[in-house]
Image 1 (cartoon, rainbow, N blue to C red):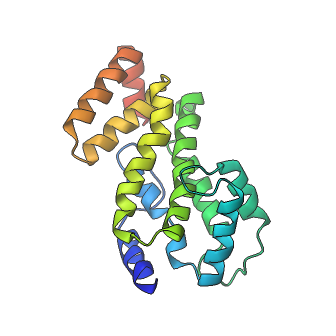
Image 2 (image 1 turned 90 degrees about the horizontal axis):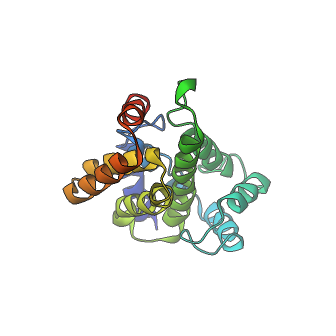
Length: 197
């Protein structure tokens, strides 16, 4: 278990801070994973929240998890507290909200997808012994969570998934998301998205 925490600590330390934009939101989600430093008692308590809120990172209810984290009594002197996870969640939820003209329902929905991944991945790290797969899980989670909104016509989610595919060097996915984005936006809307996100 200590080896897992050391590997994750090293990999997360190398990633960027939580202030994300379209080019680095993958890294922002990665750096929001706080549970790699959790003590065994904290780990057990946090996993009990997950059990009460869906049972696995893939089926968790994000609102239930947030309530569980807020109500939890884990000692503040532990290296990972529920408050740190909540703060990471809140920080990622404000991604690309620095300019008020860029804030809209599509951005809020896309940020909800980011926040859901922050919560899910914190629990994935607690629940899994496969430290090496955390980066694949980030990509998978973002594709699932953001994909839901993208397939329902959210152009910001589509744009972010196109950027994510570029980062992952997946040219077929870049083309597919780019085509979808062009079908759902006008030139003016696409320019707005590129300027904001």
